[in-house]
Image 1 (tube, helix red, strand yellow):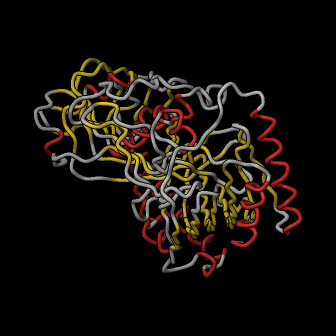
Image 2 (image 1 turned 120 degrees about the vertical axis):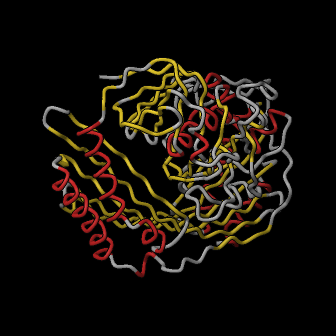
Amino acid sequence: MEDILEMAVQRARSLGASYAEARYQSDIKESILLKNGTPEATSVETMRGIAIRAIMNGGLGFGSTNVLGRRSVNALVDRVVKGAGAAGSVRKSPIVMSPAQTTKADHIIRPRIPAENVPLESRLEMLKEADSYALEAAERSDIKLAGRYLSTDALSTERTVINSDGSMVHSIVPRVSVHIFLTATLPGKGAMQRSISHGEVAGWEGAERWDLPASLAKETRTLSRALHTAKTFKGGKMDVVLGPEVVGLIAHESSGHPAEGDRILGREAAQAGETYLGKDSIGLRVGSDLVNVVDDPTLTRTFGHYLYDEEGVKARRRYLIKGGIINEFLHNRETAAEFGAVSNGSSRSVEFDREPIVRMGNTFVEPGDRSFEEMFEGVRSGVYIKNFMEWNIDDRRYNQKYVGLEAYLIESGKISSMVRNPVLEITTPGLWKAVDAIGDEMEFTSAYCGKGDPMQGIPVGTGGPHIRLKGIRMEGAP
């Protein structure tokens, strides 16, 4: 589609646009849902089209079409430029794009096992096998799996982006993911729920690496132990060790989202919320010297992987918190210009008919130097929260709450008995400032992060090592 994209950019410039950008995007998504052992839905969805953005008289316009002929695209360009000009006439300050290095690149990932070579029936059989392993483990453990939802997605995204600054980037990125939700019950002990997500930039070889049957059997046995043996958690002031799954979620929610440039400018207030950070927060201490929170989309195989964003800017590692201090925000070219900065490659769009906005890639806490055993040394009385059952955070990403699922008491430096529903309720600076030890082994998980209006669920990665919080007030839940 390069010729049509180039034509669109040149036409926008000829109409007076100071900046123009054309993007072709094709998404092929194949999904299967298994609900309580019964195939609930199988879908194959293809979406492709062209999006145009242009700046005219200080206003920004956006439009898209799935009719890819030259006449249709030219008409789209005319509408976008006209709309941008109208928007510019009522703006108090003009929109500009920060300078960016011209990029010409291809980023094509070739999977070892292309998903299209694996029949949908074979993918369904994998889910059924995993489901049967979970049921067998539940029966042996004397619990009931009241709800079992297993789904798998295979997504291939092709993009070509051309802009009036001379950049042209072409990419083909395959992704595979699995999402599992289990509800386990035991008479007299209530219910527990477990949500599990795996995702990679890969072909079907990614799904094979996860060994879902063994993984679900293990998760079911853990739910059984929690229902049968977990003691009531009384809470109190203590040291807390958090597992990588919890750490990754915290990094994403309380560090990644607050650092989004458009959110800081107030543009997400009515949609995804606000932020406790301001334009002048660079240099603000929010954590201990040990804390480094990073967003890095360049990591291979991770679910949030990409090398070039939707504005043709090369992606890089972004240190959101460095040594406990706010170090950098996430920017596209528009927000970077308002901050007097340059884009760090954070412009992403989920589909051709969605405008690129500021998004994360893979957000995580950098590893430290402590082994797993050393994370518990010196803890006389504490709690280890390996993963979570539920969580919430306020609109400003300041007050947050996490309820543990698989959790254990720590006594005299050793992991001891299982406890149920420990509750960590804390502020963002309170959490990061309490970090006094960080593990040396990383783990990643995957997610779809929702933001924007219309909503855009973008693939992201979250992760980190174990971290230890010193002297935290914990609560128990019924």
